[in-house]
Amino acid sequence: MHTCRICKKPISGRSDKQYCSAKCRSYYHNTLKKVTLNATAAVDAILHRNRSILLEVMGKNAHQKTIPQSVLEKKKFSFNYCTGIYENAKGKRYYNVYDFAYMKFSDGRLLIIRRQA
Ligand SMILES: [Zn+2]
Image (cartoon, rainbow, N blue to C red; front, side):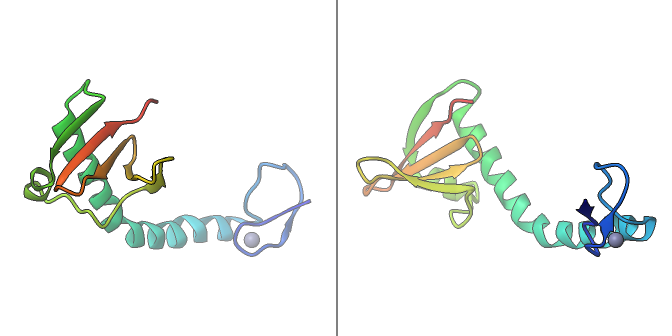
């Protein structure tokens, strides 16, 4: 037995049914989805713009590039937003932006890398 995504009532019948009723289904589609989109659109746009800027700098094929941080600043890159952070074995911190990542050198330059798919 599984339960409705909205009201948590048990659902009988097909196991791929996610809602107990048309009312719960439309509640999800009309309300929750819209609220979620409204809440996430601004950050999504910043992250997408950040990735576009990195793609512009890296071009189609480069695997890595070192550039002055000011290049990204001039393009209005938002350093406060990334999709993940990881530290390598040497303690260098990389900021992921989808399939790209960058690392800051102490001298104001950045290493940008393209992640393997
Ligand atoms: Zn329901």
